[in-house]
Length: 164
Image (cartoon, rainbow, N blue to C red; front, side):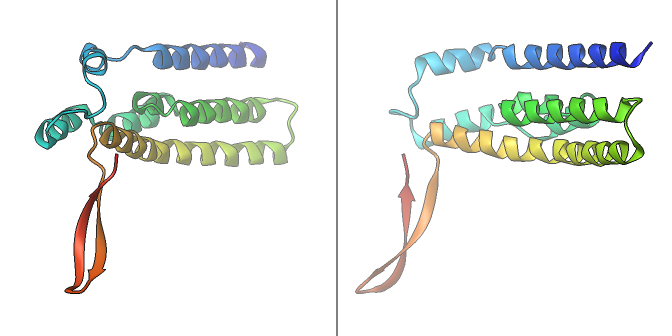
């Protein structure tokens, strides 16, 4: 198999898998929940917290997919479409340069370094994408709160602030 055939096959598989992951529909529970409930309107705190705990995601699954399968696909599980696509494109770009038979040793060295950077990013981004997903989920259910110091005549006190 020559170089062009290998690159075409790799690109085809990467694009196919990214399309499959991004087109995967939400689960039936999420679809029903989105259709029946506005964002935290009229729900008690306990119900919102339970729904958040049921819907929040762990970074372990995306990390393992990025580690063992194709680097970047795990990000699609936690709505990290941009980061997952950038990692996939970067990986393909550096693989094409690295496997190019006419590339110089310096270019191949740079491509190997680029592949290493992309691999490291692929191990970090599932955690950041999961944190962003869970933060959006907390905002959706109205669970984002903060403690704010206030100053009055009796001294410094703490006030709980809920943001919508």
